[in-house]
Image (tube, rainbow, N blue to C red; front, side, top):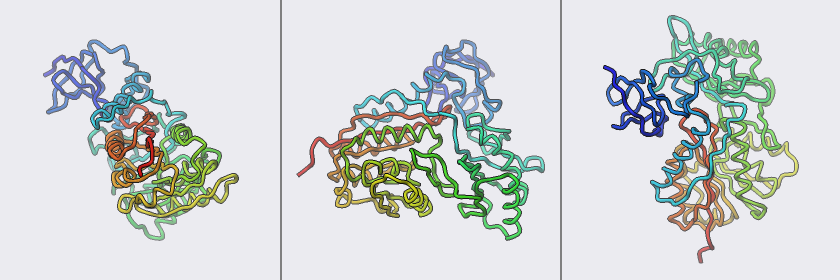
Length: 411
């Protein structure tokens, strides 16, 4: 049975929220829509009174693939909604800071994509998952990625052949690099020498830059790199890289602006392959801390090839289990941390007890950022600014950069 409801707001996942709190995917605030209820959720049947912010989606897989939730929302309204998500998280943490306007950092598109390969009607299909489902949506290409990634689904299908044509679930992490596609296959487990040889042969036919299996290289035509802030980056196989080049540039610019010319020694925590380390090292000595040995090896390679950098030191350390202590942190003029989605809870507690005058926090989850920011505030830091950076167009994710400062050193 269908019914008509009015949408009150846009929820944190991008669903319209009806007057009675029911989530309605692909509906917008102010709209009157026809729905069919399905348990605690509803299916959108039609839009009877559209919002002025409604636009025509451009992707043929919209309302099928679960990756994009707001293609029907005009870009200015989407940026305002994401700024609101950050503001709401800060308010809930009792932090009286209004976020800056969100920066659009989509740029040329996402340079990273994880595809799933499954057997469908006896053949391997590559695509993305439907929303809140394990059902595969086969795709020809993802329109929000850089053009170089448009060939990724076909490459994933071909690489699945030696692994059993998708009979075993396979995840394919693809990154667009300066040398071509970098692919890491995940979920299959070890392979025989014959299968490895077949994969390498296909990689050569596809002209891949690198192919790895669970992070172990099977082939690499030449050192794989991506353009950085004046210095190439060398990401590890399957390793972390910001979703867009424009996003990395925006995060770097905000970090450098926050640091200014004064800091002489900076700690870069959760440094990855070093995009921030390398940029900051043009004006300060940097100590980079990261748990991934392969990422640190890439950072070391980039640093040795670069010119005009101050001293860079590296430390392999699990900051979730062994955060830097106040006695270690106090040696730095500034600390930058950029943790995974889980945030930096343990490290934030140690920073709160330190004498570091300036802290720059970068996060990809508003909730964990607000939690860590509240910890720093309780330790005496003032949160000066928070700037949302949107490199996840049409998804509910948002990056942010927060600047924390002590009014004065404690005795």
